[in-house]
Length: 140
Image (cartoon, one colour):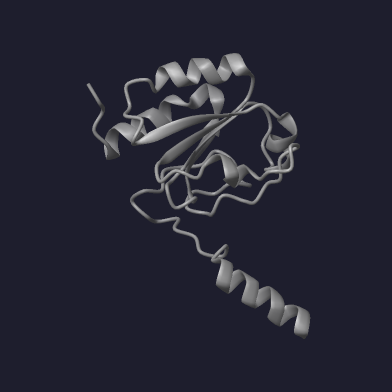
């Protein structure tokens, strides 16, 4: 019973159980393990840090789980967006994708509150761009 109370307290205080699936800032997710509106799961990285350590700024973060070339290509696709709005973050470790239940290269758009806005295979990242175009003004 003490263990159950401890889990309940942790989930309440840490707010990891809060989800916003019907928020206007929640897009879509192509992965059953990452649902729109859910809080980005805690994932430890090989260097001892956590995935959340790479997304500290109050902006959207596009996590690109793939090769460096795929990340650069994705970054160029989003070049027209203001740096104040979003940042592309390359996550090269394929083990991270596996820990998150993803197969193959993927893109995860994380909102400033660390909840998932969208998650797609990397070859469908144009949907994320359309989502950002709907909610923000492009620079230039």
